[in-house]
Length: 384
Image (cartoon, rainbow, N blue to C red):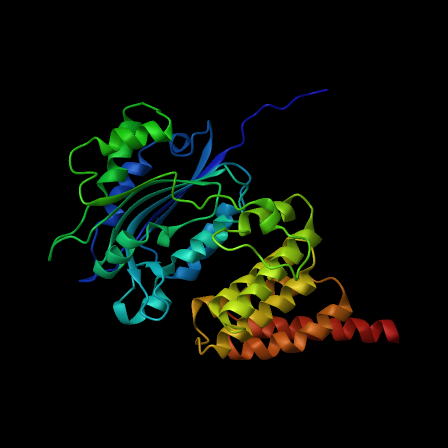
């Protein structure tokens, strides 16, 4: 018997972004040369690592695609983020500004923070670290001062770093926290992340006028009975986050239990907030992803389409990143179908949805139409 004790390689994703022009609050990309000079293994805490660098990306969907690829890797994942935060005026949710972001186009050109949280929740607890060096604009800074949980990620993700207040007029903030981390690593030192965090904060100017995050950024795990209640009609318990336990159930193969719990929370959201509320749509999308994890692409496709239609009914535009993401995921699940009856049953609805939401994937509508035609041709050949 051969025992393989080789440590899995890690992945480090460096994301540095800020608007081009007068909306820029920080020299985010200025930290990338320092981080890129660090051995990749130091960034992940592993012997071997892959380094992915995103400097002033333009498109939130492109960033999401790279993030999903990193999330799918089996080894440890370290995500380093330098940039600036803004609140969208419609939902009051934090967004990470990208190169083309402007106040009037924030919801379409910035990366919603909850997209990051949503992708990281798919990771196995304890395998993901997020290090942030962010500056908040004035409204976001006020919200964060009152509610540090505004940037909460899922349980099991370690978070270190800082968010600083907006700089003075005509002044650019500097990602000094991450620069200090890079300087320590380049010296050859490899302290544990918690010790590194303390060393960095002890340096002059790093901790001043900043909100500090040190692994207590994530919500505590919900009690299992409330989070994975097997009876969908049971009323979920209040002040808890059930998602980590639901995902744990799904990842351990208890798919029916996870689906029932998510359905119970969705019904609770319907009763408490309304059937078209963001909370209800959130749980609908959780159910769609649980169907994917359970290997049921037909159910996942159907639920993602319902989620997209629900968002459109809320007057979200067809180029809204959340609408596009829901349609893209429905499309992806439909392409995974191997059953002709299911593909033909869901195909027309997907074609109709693609006509309303073309998305950023060139020729997506034509791809669905061609594949649907092939499914019909295959069936006719079998009948003949």
